[in-house]
Length: 103
Image (cartoon, rainbow, N blue to C red; front, side, top):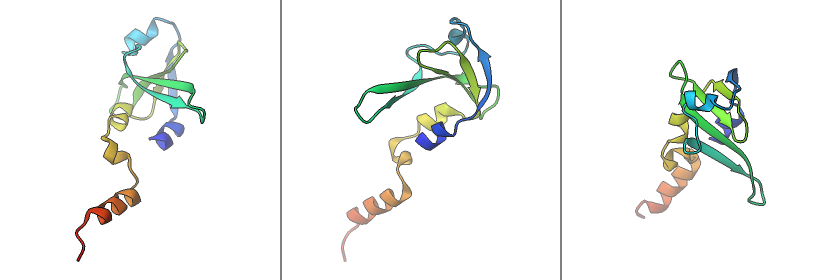
């Protein structure tokens, strides 16, 4: 998930007014990702609004800003993946090996 968010490309800014977020279904209760530093202090928040004009885009807003951007990823599908799907394949393999019956 972090890799996808770090590589996220903005297609275009779509609005800058404080009222624009409503149009794109962004509010304090929207799906969002919170980033924390090593000390556990929040340093960024990304709100995800409605799907963009195609299946592979989303509208987003950085916490504390008015601007809304169209980005190249369908973030709802990515963020709402089950936790198990976020794990590395090697971790899953190790987990499976630990629970398999011994001969």
